[in-house]
Image 1 (cartoon, helix red, strand yellow):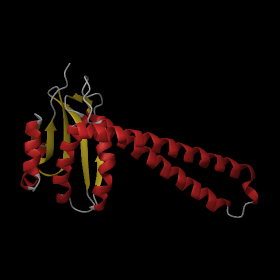
Image 2 (cartoon, one colour):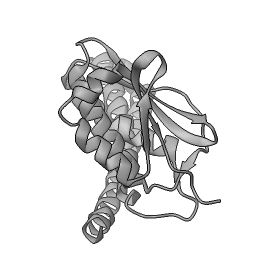
Image 3 (cartoon, one colour):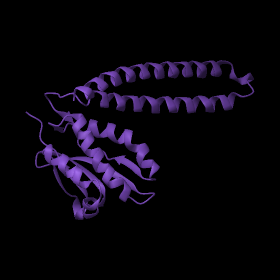
Image 4 (cartoon, helix red, strand yellow):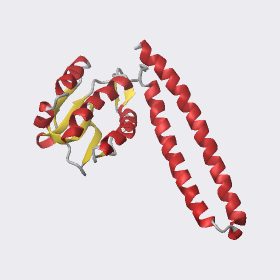
Length: 208
């Protein structure tokens, strides 16, 4: 855990610097847009330049989102008295795992769900456990399909539902034994989703 905390400190520092760099690029791009608007009518390549600035702005926003998600991971090893807000952890996890899913031609989605639901697990524990669940599910998904995660409340507990392969197929996957062991160690319940499809993780409640 000490190693994770140390790497978290380094990552937090780096992501803050990345956000400063991206903010500078954003401001510079905005200045170029303003200058083009003021005198671009005589510029032969004005339209191509505008398209380039639009692409630049889109990539800056993408970089800002990724750096914010990575910054969340930097603080994820820390324990907080109020517990971990489940939606925040899932938002970062899904954002950072989308590339791996896309390489398998699967779209990874976080559905709009309950906010404010908390668990006693540290963010790192929660993300690692859900990462294991994704590792089990993604190889079972057909190309062109969608794998959806959602955060809900059941019986006063926060649950994360993974709508994907059948529960029986997940149980047969190579990583399921490790996932089950990790869930048991963290007092997380594993069960089938509606109709025997997907997986539901019932999270331990945060201290009041």
